Image (cartoon, rainbow, N blue to C red; front, side, top):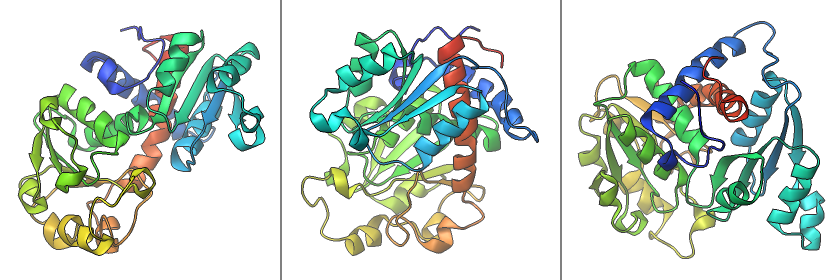
Length: 309
């Protein structure tokens, strides 16, 4: 199967077949990452620009490692040391980078829709590394990859997403991805953090964590995004943790072989206790490792369209 998408902007735009092609390609890329020499010439001669307008540790580092393992030429753009501080627009900045030969632009931006703007106006391939509270496709794809690696199949699994659904681009992309691959998705969090009409996305909504966890195969804990909240949506962190923090006792309500995930960074003692974060059920560091393989697959597919790595 050939990957026909020029860009990867969100999981809403991808078919189940395209998602599976990315996951299958990531399996081949993972084999590359396990070699002594972790490098292939797949993107030799291709210039990739990492255009990050928001802070990032895992995603930015993971993309850069992925690009270098594919032998791409990599440019890391830092807004605070660029003409952005002189008032240059996002589009002008991107057009200038494209004029220097950027084949692929990986963008993270606080404004929802910024990757779509670049995809519409530029000839380069655009990869969304997170836009506002809208989508974070690479995180959802690495979550799907990690679950499929352990459970072998996603169809029929019960996936619980816990926390700040309203502001979470991770949650939105995961909902699209898991639903398209046949999982049952349960959302749980305070009513003030639940998007209006979210049930229309074919999910089940809970306000009791205990109820949502019963029989769960996968639990995805979300970070409380204080930076995106205009006003307090819950009385205090202690209050939030009391009702929605994951403890070992609560986790026992899920299936015995439940997988615990978190996109990071973790607020230990708020979203989940330290004993749970480091529990045998936790695959949080596996998610980080798999992120490189999944991002290699994304870059390879948008740059070449090839389905066989």
